[in-house]
Each structure stands twice: as structure tokens, then as C-alpha cells.
Length: 95
Image (tube, rainbow, N blue to C red; front, side, top):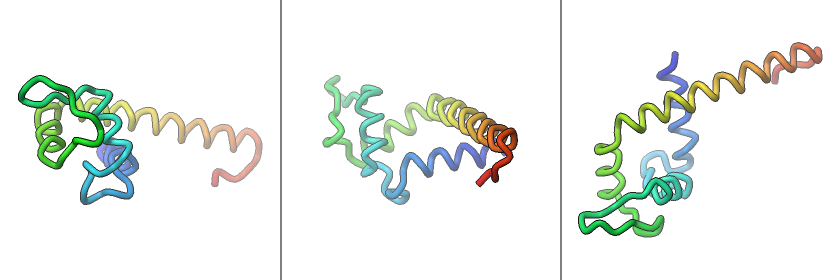
């Protein structure tokens, strides 16, 4: 079940650029703040992130990205459970 939540987080981050995630403003901003470096040691800005840079980053940092998705999926689960509990205590519908 965790994998489904991780996929959901990844989809929400890349939306609406599912087939071209390097065009997503959120992911570009995250890569820029993470500090993506090219061969010469200079940092990429969000505007200069290309598909090659994006794929190289994903392949290089895949374990860290999986840990991030697990963490985000856990937070998503907690927020959904707290919403259900709060609605139940108030006697409202969950949706």
C-alpha cells in the first residue's frame, strides 16, 4: 500500500507534466534548491534543467528520492487519517 501512496505523491508533484516531469515548476524548483550541479561544478537554475539533467539527477539520487517519497507518503497517510478522525468527531461526512 505504501507504493501506491508514493506513486500518488510523485504524480501530485509532477502534475500536469506527467510525461515530461522536468517541465514541472514544482520539480524544477525542488531540483534547484537541492543543488543540482553540472560537470563543471556550477549550479543549475530552474530554467536550465533539461531532460538530461533531470534523468541524471534521478538516477544518481534514486535512493534519496525513494526515501523522500516514503516520508511524503507517510505524511499523506497521517493527514488523511487526521481528517477522517476530525470529521468523525464532528459528525460530518469525510468528503
